[in-house]
Image (cartoon, rainbow, N blue to C red; front, side):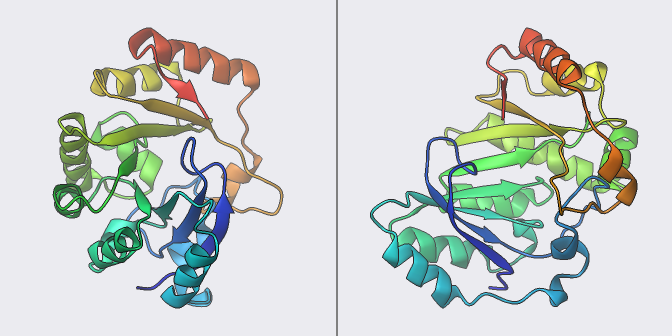
Length: 235
């Protein structure tokens, strides 16, 4: 498994749980606001972390680490992802998967084999080809069909999951969020995240480093989402 980064302890990647976070390289999207630039565009420049290091950290922290979050990049691009999840489950850790939903076949396998305990699926934009292509930086027609299939799988699933959207100025407005919410009606959990470029971070499109969303705008968008999905939360 080509692991390109590890956070030994995270308080923010899985609500209510202390986790270790694994970063896997490569992505089939080129979201202009993405800040994992090297992980997506130049993963070969990053040092590979041996799985033995992950095992060692988990064994040393077994008294307080409750789960492992697998993120990226896009983890479902890796054919050996089920093996990674299986090894973590055999160590008695819960597994959370962050995904863009473009590989429903892999997602189905992970869910059906009970290799993941929680899935966070990013909804990049309203589910139209034009909007999704703009938000992801690629021609999204075929991949959007896969995203819709993954959404359907989670909506019909008994497992724990969340849908989440990073609200980005110039890409999203209140109407966009309203359209997304209408596509997710009946979901267990919807989360909005405010786009923010931390000091020292870059974005795939450098123009997005200067974009910001006011707190007032974010609150209005959150209120709009809660009109359709009342339990929408902000992270």
